[in-house]
Length: 433
Image (cartoon, rainbow, N blue to C red):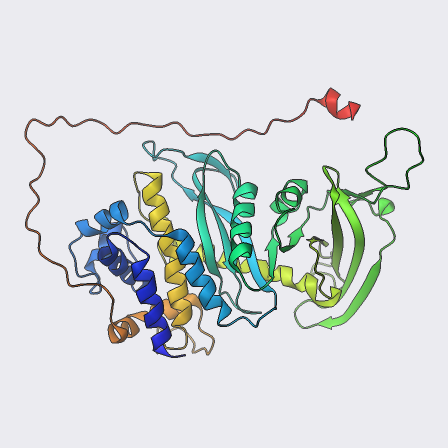
């Protein structure tokens, strides 16, 4: 890959930071080349950060990354690698940035992820560029406010990406999105979705023909996924004798089903079963998937695309552990969002540099051809020195005047955490329906 492409990308990204561009851009270079840090100010010790340590905090206070234009910049790079008219695979998920003790941070919420986490939730839509590997390149990485939800935020992100993408979009999502709420939220979005469905879910077939009396029926026969006696006759069944990774697999598909609260949205249900048992003799749990969309893909390949969803989980771990996303204790949600906007930007730079860096592996690491994001970041320093930076030389501004005499110091206000509640219908009303 030509280094000019990386240089052009860095120059375009530099302009989209709007304010405090120099300090913010040097902060990104320092983060990418610093494997370990205990606080945010430690990045000022990196040779690529040419300013004093207070400039780091001023950068997050003053910078204004243009999130939508940055997404267009990412899509421009995506279209250079994706064949025209071919589905681009995107994974959608959300994670929590725990801020349990940050009582002065406004709009903290209860996030439910392997238990209850008090902090901020972030929704991410990421392009999965390869059929294998751990690369995931975020297009949007946004905070979920207390007035929104992961499903509403994900639908907004998917709609924005589909409006700007030239290629058709296939989104893969975890079982939290495999329900009627998500199906209704994405009904007007021109995208295909492949979601995991929980094993105790229920779906309904199309209703029978109208008899002419009473209200027309909306639902047909009920199909409980955890009760095989209620299953309908499958519309398609295929068997793969020996899959390279999973062994023998049987895939079944039911067409034109729907969720109870979304009778107008058709869903194709897919069941994936591994025929070979686990090492303890027990069968593997079944994988239930739901396909929603106008376009169709062959049953032999569509179910396997769901397994690429885990790329976004790899990126979350990489962002938290290597890009130090959850390291700083920032005061305001706006500062947290500006810092979070830098995570996708650094990930795309690492992707564009994967064929340019000279691997600088540790003594106990084995050599590899396909570099992971961590390996690229580990070898990024010498490349950044060679290609240079678009930032300007810092100017000395003298000493700060300090705190004014007589000015009263006040404590920062504390804010309560917001616990989102789901209003459920009363049992008597549910029975009446």
